Length: 418
Length: 164
Image (tube, rainbow over all chains, first blue to last red; front, side, top):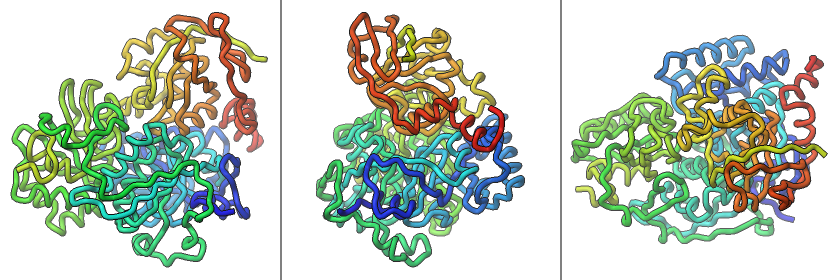
């Protein structure tokens, strides 16, 4: 019997011929990601558990991103605890100000196709963009992995999402995943794996796939996977081995559900306040006055995202009552965007360009909003109170749409902002 | 069969972890420092009103959103005995089990119960509301093992030959 991608990854990991949804198995962990907010809690649980050492220091990555640079007095405590933990257990993979954890895990080559990777942040689903099994866990389970190198998982059912054709001009992978979340609902993929396939997906860059895998959690998914291809190999700096090349869904694999889309049917959309699955066409929302725009995050803070925004804003000005905050996802993205003149274009248009990191996405640093204000943002969550008070309205959109809105000072479709 | 009774707080669908404990409070040093802010974006007064032994009844997809384990820890610290919801998001589910917070999936109760009512839970059997019994499923064996060990930390301490 055929297998889905996630079934192939898990059965390979545990050395079994095959696995089926519902099986509870113990996987060998290939890499873990610990983020700054959770580090003090992970360290405390790890020490309480009484392990003499971490199972494999090379497989452990510590990343400071939510709290960098510090915005509250106690934030630096997290760095100190992380530094001491890394020193004590010989962990070399430590990033103190290089960017957002999920961007770094793939960009810095910590994740390879077919790996099993866990992180203390829910958007750990991102690494499915290169064909890895990755998902978020809590700090107690992370502490247990640090000691044992293993984690129990239930083999998930898979929802196959096939998208064929060519996306229309101005439609980005963000519009695709938002629409899908709207169709599935915020819990429509709970406990399940989303497997993306089809010619539109094959045409996408790894960065665009990353946006979709990143937001799989917003439909409740345990993980999301793309078949690794030549683009993946180049992005990861590897040659795909036979196992990695085998990571496609078999034609006789069993799927919980199959969704088929034609790429030409997609259009620019937004997730409206305050549910990620409240999806509307941008056209329906046009005219709504906004106070701020945020372009950044592990969802849409990459080079191609900033370039799209710069292309929209070239020779234009951000509306004078709007703050446009641009936050590159990593130092590397920042440097490349600077080298290519993207940051200059954005700055000339009136953008506020910040240090790389999680920034405003988690409501922790500059740009916090207040009652009655509206923001168009490229990140992944528009939950109540996420970017300020509980009476802030957050509209999630693609970088192209967000940039157009910044110029217009109101919700518009890209191309209508002049 | 373990049985307990508690007063009910009713919440809706998709109660996310940013509602349960907003990011701005996650770097407070202890769960005790955080718990006063529990549910503050939705119901700022709720954390102060919850009494030990109370029960939360909610709709579907409880605990969706971030992986923050502070969410079940804050709820446990507020004294909530268990959460009965239509469904739970998966990371929240694992985090709750690992901290010994009992979660019960029950799809229908939410439509019948009013805030302030009392319900009686018979673990692995049913929830009784004014004599009407709502059936509940048993937990998988590997989860029962973690709960019986008193949570994952204690299970690991035992593994490492340490006193609990």
